[in-house]
Image (tube, rainbow, N blue to C red; front, side):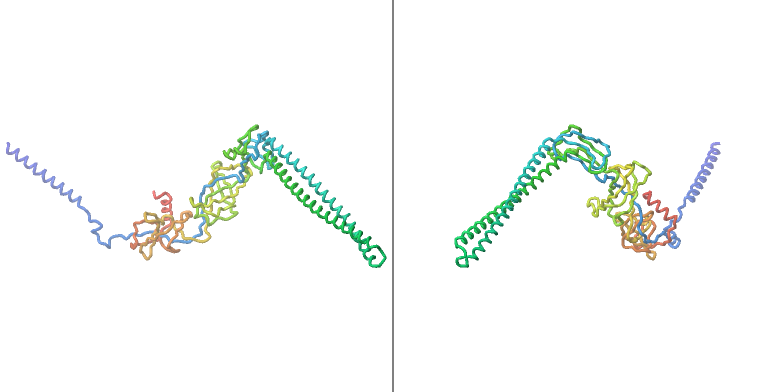
Length: 439
């Protein structure tokens, strides 16, 4: 019985061992490794075909969003030029005013006293001038009389002297008396001429005095005119820092740089200042209209006209400030608003363009992969302005050169590849990938 049981158990173990061996053999046969590509013949490997595009010339004409700021065309702080106190102020913040409108009246009794004093001195100077002129004219009249007497006495002397040549016709004493009288007349005329010269000098001095006094009067009157603050142009009051009764002190204002009494801004005509990058200044045209938007009016487009380019670059930002004139008759735009300008960028000559995906960047710089007769060549370039899905390519490349659609450093210079023209779908897909940041 035991032997029979032992034989059966031995047969079962043998069968189980055979079954396990078959399973292992089957498993090993199923997991047998395939031959690798390296073991395959070189002729059996597939050659990589790379899509390429051709560099073409285009006239750059694109649009960039540039930040700008709206400013009042005229922005004037109004300060006091004389000391006093404000006796009247007729405007407040937000008041719209016209040119020449009276805004503030300053009372300064000292200024009025100076004007009256200067006017009094002018009246005295004018009176002295009139006296000098009168004395001069009187001297001229005296000269006329003296000259007439001198001429008459001279004629008498001449006749007597002529008659005295005839013996016994006239006494010599009469001739001598006539000669002496003539000489006295001549001396009188010379004295009057000296008086006339002196009188003329007095007249000139008095005239200069009158002119100087008038200048003083004009200056004091001008100072008195400063007591009235008027609007220099049509605009709106955007700042008010004084009230009726406020004391204004010119010296303190200069030392402490106090705020102005009023600030007036012209708002129906604005300046839009745009910082144009260095690479975009070549297409600036005076008189060209540029559209812009402001956050306060989403969806609404405004326009400004290029009026005043800076013609000089800021060395810190490498930008040129350009001013645009913006008419604002409805006064919907306000000074200080931020604006986004749709700036048109053009080139006066054509340049090379390629799809953005064909221009790559790595640690060595910006490059394109040029393919010449199936051989790869890495060419350093500079990326210019974008235009749609294209980008300017600047470097040692030319029109008609073929470059890979995707610029990658996997292609080493000298590598042989097969190429084919990239399809529109491939170009569009590459552009979408490039615009998405390669994600």
